[in-house]
Length: 338
Ligand code: PHE
Image (tube, rainbow, N blue to C red; front, side, top):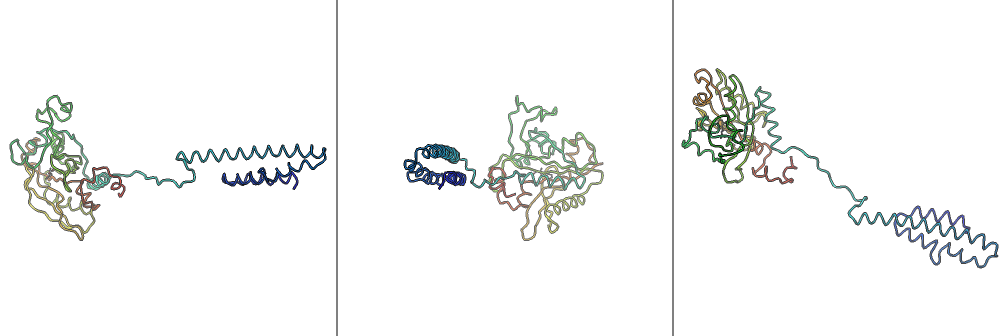
């Protein structure tokens, strides 16, 4: 074989080597002890001095060149394998990337707001740290009234509490974490005149042991509609419309009498979805006169309905979630299902 041919085929073979092993066999084939080029170099001794000089220098140059190329390529293989052993493998299939999405409670919250906005309700917000006056007294639940037991309360140290001002509004009363969002309705009525219709979504707190259906922290949506002739019939329409929009048109309703100090008459609303049993979803009723007195409305001139429901409970019903604690434990295997 002449040197030109050897050069061509060797360079070709080096370029085509795709693994360190391939490269090593190219090395052996051309430069090994019985290699092609080695053979040429060995046979130099049989040539005339002139040929030996001519071919010898070419053959040696080629040997050098091939060694260089092989070295270079072998280094690049080594670099790659170092990267792989450091945990970077360019050939490995990629990890699945999870895109972020809303928490089921945020989803239900957005949906509830949308439905009430479509019925011309406004969304109102208020402080989570409340005082006793707004959370209880103004809602016709005076101190020492047995109805206070309905709400197990986290009381806060009031003295020098930096949040004092947030909840105070001039009333000097004990601080607490709000047990419902009803106090926001008092705050709203103090500053606005009827007619109006509002909802108050927000976080509430109860001092109680947790189980499948109880958390010490959860979310509520309360509603209030006040005007000169707002009636229980209006309430029925609003709540039925709301539930149909949230749960579908086949939902059935049951209205039962219930007691809450701030409404008279008071009631509880149960719903039934296809194939399911009766589920209690909200408390409601016509606003009690004492509540209107507390906000300086004339109870002979205005009337209204109020209702309150747990957002968590709505989400549990809608998404068939068996345990309220799943919302708060941060387990991504749960969250990713929504
Ligand atoms: N505030 C009540 C609660 O948290 C719910 C409610 C609101 C009941 C309005 C009746 C009317 O339990």
